[in-house]
Length: 123
Image 1 (cartoon, helix red, strand yellow):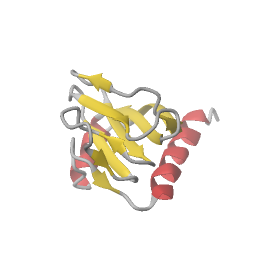
Image 2 (spheres, one colour):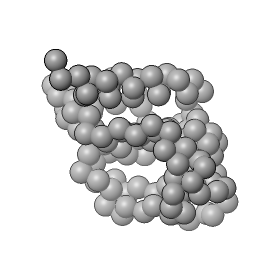
Image 3 (cartoon, one colour):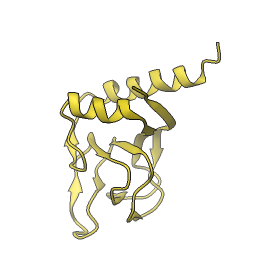
Image 4 (cartoon, helix red, strand yellow):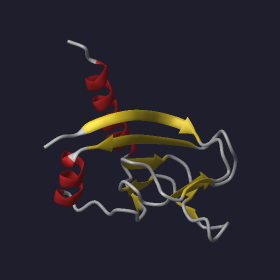
């Protein structure tokens, strides 16, 4: 079973009003929105609350946008792939393509930080 973390971002501001990837990406994308964000392109006022997570599988359409103001609304994220990702999603009953709230922001950021440190460790 493999788990490959390709790239990780921490508390980056959302720059674009609309990011639409109709065919998604070739890997899994987990995003954690520290501030309210739009995750639906069909309803402009449809904001998800802060502390929202969404997990998109490879090839799934992705849309996200800042909720109120560009460059100030942070999100953390990871692109990853491998059979271990699918297994973890299944075993932990993580909703796919459906936003859900994780109140403990540090749990998400600490996990991403741990993975980033492991990626950076060359020993």
